[in-house]
Image (cartoon, rainbow, N blue to C red; front, side, top):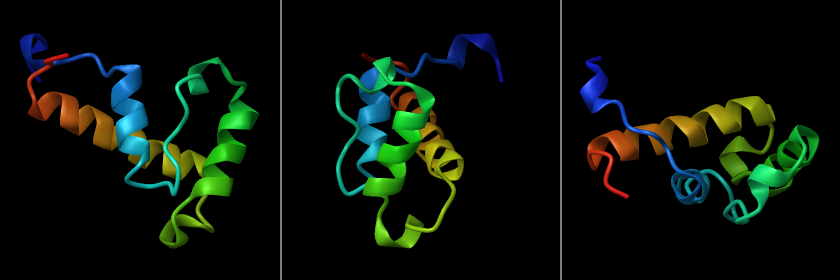
Length: 77
């Protein structure tokens, strides 16, 4: 992928994307939490479809959607 079309994902992108996989969006301070606390939040708030999924898998889905959205809108913040 050419470097000029790679865009940085923002904290807000991650929060927005989390709402597609969780019953409650990640809070605004999620990036200050320890990994274990993030994992617990993902487990506790996973949609029914993801309720037995590993938190790392849920995180990958959130991050992938955030990157896709950022790429789609062209890096606008």
